[in-house]
Amino acid sequence: MRTRALILATVALMAVANGAPLYESQLIFERPTSDAPFHAHASCLVECPNGDLRAVWYETGAALPASYYSESRDRSDDVRIGGSRKARAAKAWEKPFVMADTFGVSDNNPCMVIDNQKRLLLFYPTLTGAPDWPWGSAVLQYSVSTNYSKPGPPVWSKQNILIPHVQGVKEVVESSLAAIPDNFPPDKVEQFRKDFAARLNNVAYYRLGWMPRAHPLLRSDGAVLLPLSNENFYVAAMAVTSDGGDTWTYSKPVSQTGITQPTLAEFPDKSIVAFFRNTGKEHRIKRSESSDGGITWSAVTLTDRPHPGAGIEARVLKSGLLLLIYNDVDKAPRNKLAVSLSTDRGETWQWTRHLEDSPDGRFDYPSIVQGKDGTLHATYTLDAKTIKYAHFNEEWIKAGDPAK
Image (cartoon, rainbow, N blue to C red; front, side, top):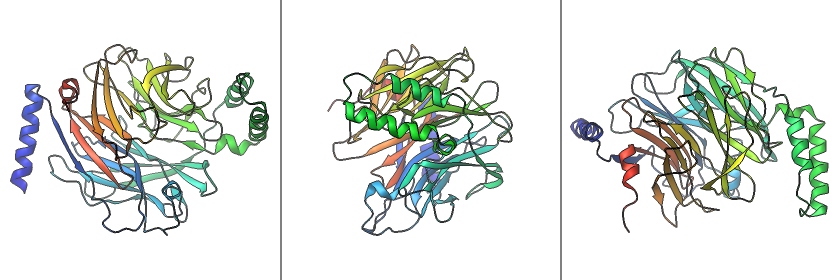
């Protein structure tokens, strides 16, 4: 077994060195063998300073009653944050373990980053009002570790909650309400405005409901930008820390509602691009840019990338190319998962290849990092039952999909 692992690692290194396409994949854990309902979703992974990989996701902690539909399983009382570690050069991932579990409520949408002090930061929202008021009731928690190089979960040195105080949310929401198209059904407009007027006058809606999803961005100056969206107003903003979470500041909100789950990528000129999950009917990913480190944002524009309303991630690679991983379908089911490369900051996309393309599958909520050796590591949900890991390089993407 050890010899086989060393052989596979050697083959992978030779492929990287020779610029040949590289692709390999495996499940982090096997699908449950029983018929009991189980749900695993929304992974995120990091490469550690020692070359280990760590992944997190949320999962149901035990078998659920058959009365729970799949849409309800991610907000049941036993949902927790699971995790695993793949040691450097190891063939397989460790047996999963619990990373975080707030007793009696649902923990969701985890994300991680390693800052410039080599601290591992884990963020996740706890849905205090689930199941009836799930996402909008989220309270954001975070943990910090400097001891995560051994098997099993990290040893947390700090755990805290973060209640964002983002200024300008009301103005963005009111501006969007005023801009509702004339052809919007009048009865729905009135109810929509009534509902939001009640929220705008309640401070709880501003402080709760902030959800992470994609990786935090380690900015070139060492600050960590945590991309967030508020599920009560569908407004995006960034939380910023330069001291491992001891203190926080916040960006201005992005100037449009209807966007969630931002993903951030920084270019060499220090400008930052954000791509958003779009809750509108365009079925296309949206984007905005910042020239001041993510504090203020340009007007939101529509990209040409197909979008079924699902998780996405972007990253600027060492080669200078911009990478986007996403479901390139207009609507559900999320049965295709693509990775695209751009030479012009995402205006156009020169190469696209599919990690998954099957009419009967579900593949979504991807996470992707670039390793120190330049290769790419991705995780994503497979049929809401397990998390799949893929390891590949830019040459594999540029080779394109094989002929069917």
